[in-house]
Structure formats: structure tokens, C-alpha cells
Amino acid sequence: MRQIVLDTETTGLEPSQGHRIIEIGCIELVNRRLTGNHFHHYLQPDREIDPKAVEIHGITNDFLVDKPRFAEIADALLEFIRGAELIIHNAPFDVGFLNHELRRLGERYDELLGYCTVLDTLDYARRLHPGQRNSLDALCRRYTIDYSHRELHGALLDAEILAHVYLAMTGGQVTLSLDGVREGSAAHAAVPQRLRADRPPLRIVRATAEEVAAHAQYLDMIANKSDGACVWTVPVPEGEGVP
Image (tube, rainbow, N blue to C red; front, side, top):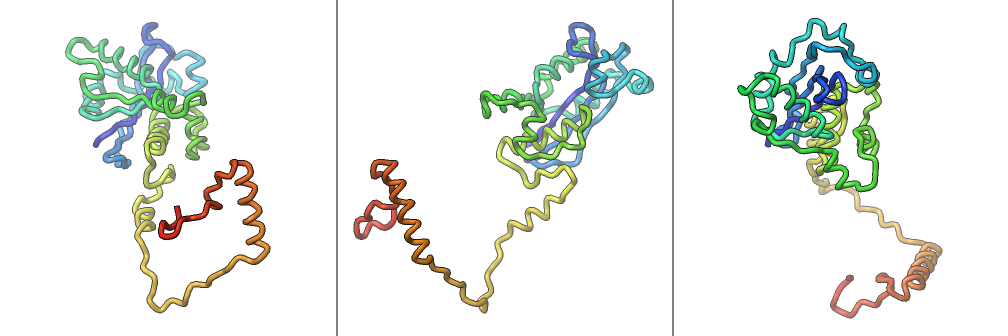
């Protein structure tokens, strides 16, 4: 299964107002593993970037003067994502901008869903954690993913962080580290180890009389609060084993 985690940065919030993509970052996953392959470009938008947008991503018009335009990287982008499932946080935003850019290129290009499918991780997170904050930062905190090096938004960095968030949200992965820890080391740790035949016998530590009394007192408390429904105090019929 091939998935592409994608993020963009833009000159503003609304493509209908002529705003453009100025950075696009993609991270490849195959069978839920980071492959190391990525697609990343800064883009010349041929318009001014809103000051509020600069505060978010730190990208300026001066920085983009010598960068390619979307038309120059469109074919390479579409080839990179073709046939994959795109993983995007707040997908309507990025998909809207990508479709806007593709429409500007004329009838030669389909809209985005003509090349791939899309999974919106924001929608997924809202269904998984209803009533909670589900921004990328909030999800990093919830799944203990380190994002301390993220001072400003950036398409490639946010795509990498989102890849780890997505894997954690949908069943985990070999490692959640963003520091390049080798997956093989975690896999090696999971190999079962056989005990030596000549090992010394295991030490048996029995509960003291005080610990047994404290345990019985705790079970009585549970039984009282549950109207006698404490399963650890219910007698087991002979031959039926422990429930």
C-alpha cells in the first residue's frame, strides 16, 4: 500500500481570491513505513504573500524570487502521487489549492482526485477524539510525538510530523522518533529470547500476613460498593476453574 503524506504553504487562505501555493512537501509511506522518498519544492507565486501568512510559515517573496512556478513542477508532482492515497490534515484546504493550481494549467490536467484518493486526518481525528482539540500540535501532544524543533510551519516538516501522527493514530508504527532511529533496532528488540536451561530457579516471593489482610480488606471494600458483585470474592464451583 502506497500513501503520500502531503502539506502545502500558501500566500493566504482563499484560492478564490487569487492566493497561490508557495511550498509543497510530500513524504512517501509504503506498507505503513517511511521509505525516505519525498517530493519538495518552494514555488514562485507571482503575487504578494499576505503578512499574516508570513508570520505562520516565515516564507517571503524575496526568498521565492528564483524558485520554479507550479506549472514547472506539476508533471513531477502528479507522477509522484499517482495511484497513491494522500494523507492530508484538513484536506479541503490543500486539495482546494491544488485543484486551483491545476485548473490554471488548462484542460490538459484533471483535478486532484483524478490521480489519487485522499484521507483527511483532521476528519479522522475528530471522529476518533470527539470534542477535543485535533490540530497537528494537539495530536503531537496526545500521541507524545516530539515536535519541539517546529518553530514555524513548513510543508515538508509538517508532512513528516503528520506521517508519524497518522501512523500513531491508526495503529502505531515501529518507531515514533523523528530523529532517524533505525527501524531494525526496534524489530530486533521484539525477537523472543529463550531462557537458558542452566538458569537458577526463579525466586518465589510470598505475600506477608499484613499484605494478605490488606488485600482482603480491599476486596471487602469493592464488594460493599458493588452490592456483593466483586468477582474476586465469588466462590468458584469445583471443577470450573477461575473465571
